[in-house]
Image 1 (cartoon, rainbow, N blue to C red):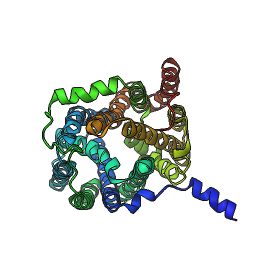
Image 2: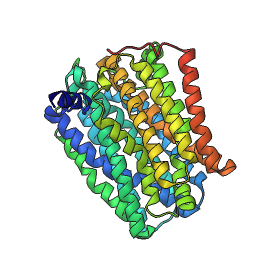
Image 3: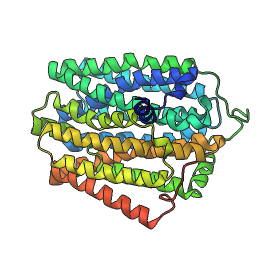
Length: 418
């Protein structure tokens, strides 16, 4: 019995970072805001599909988010290295909240404008692009160095738990109410729960640059360039970013969910299951992630996880039963969590604190920008060749390209645990 308990503890998620009060508050606040944001993440494409009946317009939401994301993630990371990160996180969070309130107001008024949805998506993306690298850059300041992988796993696990329950809740809302009622409910819950992040950020201690020279660094593209130069001279980080772009651009099927839910499964709660499926696997992977920090060949594990992601997504696209499609997407989600934890940990432990904000900005542009490019790819391909081809071919291509990249540039698969 003691042996069984020992093995269970080795597999169970490592909760040591929660003993630090500032990290614990951020973790709880983020859990609430992530849950609310996932209702909006389903409601916006659902509203766009209701207005246009075209997956291409749903894919355009990805493009609307991508441009400000790329610009402000890089700039926001530079700012995070030059000023108090708590203050910057507060300001960017308020802008995110304002964009959500804008979505709520337009739904209540029944404006029904696809172009307004694109604009509000862009504003929200701009704010998130600043807050995400800032939030990630402070993690090593809130926990011990050997707890960073565990802290990242906890963050990814709770965000993915929100990506399970948020879409399921959204699916329930749209199953019970018409869009004219369901959309304001989804946006309103998001606006309410986002106050959790505001509260947690307000309670953070001051987080100036470690050398104390707040505002001394020039915040501009020259500062961004310093971070990019460090990145380009670190092949392991470049390759980890490249392989994530491959996985998300080629294999992310998210933009196809509204059409598949409506055409193949009759709408209703099916859209909630599809949007939550990947996260279900990520949560299960996180709850059994005690082994992740003990893997030595972390680069090789990252590549294998991306291959599993691509193949599982491709098989899901061939499924004709909802339960099977959800199961295969969950397998893909488990693999995605593993790759995400290793990418984030590599970056945080390789980068010095003085550059961590800028490199987290690049990380944000890659991690959040890749799926949005994937949305555009999937929507355009579905319009031209149908949803099944757009879905399956992307997953197969992601797995193949990931293997080719790893073989062509072996620095990543040789990367050991630090």
